[in-house]
Structure formats: C-alpha cells, structure tokens
Image (cartoon, rainbow, N blue to C red):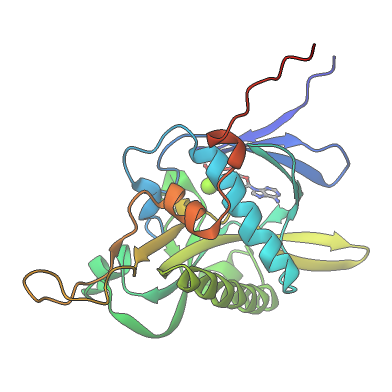
Length: 260
Ligand code: ADP
Ligand code: MG
C-alpha cells in the first residue's frame, strides 16, 4: 500500500499531499496551545486542553470556512474527510498572520496600556511576520511591500477579506452569546488560469480567537456589581456545543447489534 506523503508538520496540524494536484489534507492534532504569538491566541493557551481538541477544531474550522464559502468569501476549505481531517485547496501562503481586533485584549492592552475589554472605535487590522524563530514580529505595510511578502493590491484584498471574515465571525459568535475580541487568519494565493486570487487558509478555531462569554452578564452578581465578560471557559467544547457542531458519534456510540 502506498504511503501518503507528509508535506509539513506544525504544532497544530499535519499537512499531507491531497488526492489531486492542488489539494492538501490537513490533519488536526491535539497538541495544546498552538497559538503562542502576540496576536489573537488567548484561547489557544488555555490549559487542560487535550483529547479531542483536534476533532473539535476540525469541526469548527469546517463550520466557519463553509459558512464563509456560503456567503462568497473564498476559503481553502473543500470538505471534511473524517473526524480529524479535511480536504483543502493548496495555496501559496502569504507569510503573515493577519490579526483583526474589535476589543482591546492581550498584547494590544499590554503594549499600549489600553484596558482589556475596551471597545475599539473601529476594527484594527495588524500584520505579524510568520517566522517563529523571530517570534512572529509585528510588521507594518511598509515592511511587507518593501520585502516583497505581498504587494499593495494584495494587502488591499487581504484587508477586505479579513474584515468580511470579521463581520461573519462576530455575528455568528454573538448569536451564541460570545464576544469575538480578536482573531487571526492566514491568507493564501491560488491560481485560476492566469488569475490569482487570495483566499482564507489555515484554520478558524478557538486556537486563533480571543473569545469572551456574554451569557449570564445581564444580571448583577451577589455584591450588586455588573460583571465584565470573561474568557470563555473550555472554548473548544463550549463553542462547538453552542454552535451545535459537536460530533454526535463521540458521545452517543451505539453498540453493535447481534444479527441472528
Ligand atoms: P504552525 O505550527 O506553523 O502554526 P500548523 O500546525 O498550524 O502550523 O500547520 C499549518 C501549516 O499549514 C501552516 O504553516 C500554514 O501556513 C499552512 N497552511 C494552512 N493552510 C494551507 C493551504 N491551504 N495551503 C498551503 N499551506 C497551508
Ligand atoms: Mg498554526
């Protein structure tokens, strides 16, 4: 039997050659905290994450990417293959992590002294150069264009893409009582004949989002204080549960039936 070819192994996923040219299979691992950069990764560093994280991220990424495809925002997602794998279009990844922020959190709060939870006057888009040896440093458009990682037209397209993803994700999250403080995506180039198109690649999961729970905030607590939204507890399970994408065959296994 032919062994499939591993293309890349990162912290969160393994990429295999896909069944057709221009496709890849992404396998979602359970490794905790694949984020660990300065952008939108609060949930990804949650402790106690282990078994099943990959299964849930595979489902969640499928849910968000196919939702985006459905409203005309192009993504790499083709279809889910099994519990841990999905088929995607192979893209030429732009070496940037694109962060969109709606509320001050994490690194933005630390660097600029803006209290966590402060609503931002408009969504802020930031870029980080994807190089873990350098610690994924924040870069300006000037660096990106000067060093040829993307041109100005690409950047305009990337911002438009990122803001559409933001509107979609924020709305979906709000619908289940979750505030999307920030998130990050990767963008990739695909070629259709002579035309190049930028699409959303990588993954959309709690590993790349900062999520705050809005449920139960309507009433003051016992001391009469109005509570602030806090981090969503167990974001993988909770988000999957609220969105109704928990894999049912994990919890409700049926016993084999004896046929006489
Ligand atoms: P990392 O540890 O570098 O974050 P991951 O474990 O998340 O890596 O593995 C995903 C890798 O696959 C990333 O390097 C990402 O840029 C790349 N990737 C994601 N989607 C695609 C795609 N559609 N085509 C090619 N490469 C992709
Ligand atoms: Mg990653």
